[in-house]
Amino acid sequence: MVSAQLHPHDLASQVARLFFDRQMTKVEIAAHLGISRFRVARLIDSALADGLVRIEFRDIAAEDRAVATAIEERFGLDLCAVVDVDTDLATDPMTSVARLAGAVIDGLIGPSEVIGIAWGSTMAAVVREIPARSATAIEVVQLAGSSSRLGRERDAGQLARSLADRLGATDHPIYAPAFVASREIRDALSRDPEVARAMDRFEALTLAIVGIGAMPVGTTAAASSLFRSGVLGDADVARLVALGAIGDLVVHPFDADGRFVATDLTDRAVAITIDGLRRVPRVVAVAVGVGKGAAIRGALASGVVRMLVTDGATGRAVLAGA
Image (cartoon, rainbow, N blue to C red; front, side, top):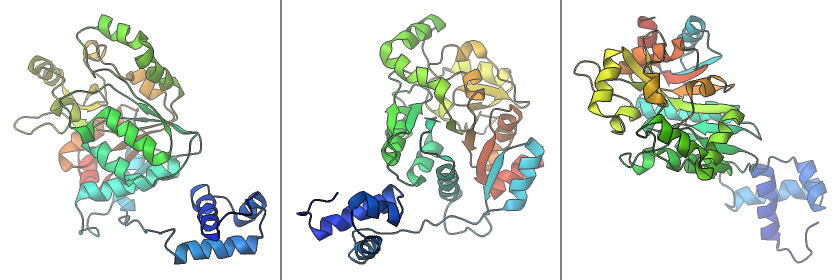
């Protein structure tokens, strides 16, 4: 029941929060607060009129369903969403794809999800576009350790915290580097209570949000946070290229056929394993750039990624080599 001393302006704020944040119906709010549903409706109207609540329409780009459907059918995906770059000329592809990805992911998030998130500039752009909500039953889990060489915005721990803040969720950070010197050190770190607390949540993941990294090819620079972060040495990079690696998921390099290579390297990673990632019911990859076409094909061929968000030009590059 509402206190008799509650100011009407405060009551309007409370009603607005219940209606917009908690998604309660007007009838439910009336019963909860002990007022009539007609008064609830008036208070919601006044909250909008007085500026207590502002409604912003997010500019989601038009979709290219033909390309999306072709990718779904070619790779057997559960979902593909593609920005129609021909009708979305006002913004750069990354912004448009991030907005579409934010909308797609928002629709996938239920009231009690356990969400894993990777690292990188694409993930940072997507997190900014996921609509805010208050859902304390949601958990956000960092999928891999970090590196001091990553910028603050692309840092895995920062991204997990930012997403948790947007969702009103609990976050599970990994206080460790992405790669360590040996598997023995990795195993010891994973037993540390601070690190184990997060890694133990890998088995509970219901949704994972990842980027797709592209390895350096010839004179083409890498489009991968795994490489740009500097967590791998030159010898590691040369070995991966020699093994035919063309891309990576989180910290796991793969070749053109979707086979994961250099597993001895990833044994040193403080991160979710590729088998752990395979067990996540929904893995959503967000990737932008025609130069990533081959890497995206490899990622989809691996069978780990079941959902993809990209732009039309990139999508056509994926199909051109398929």
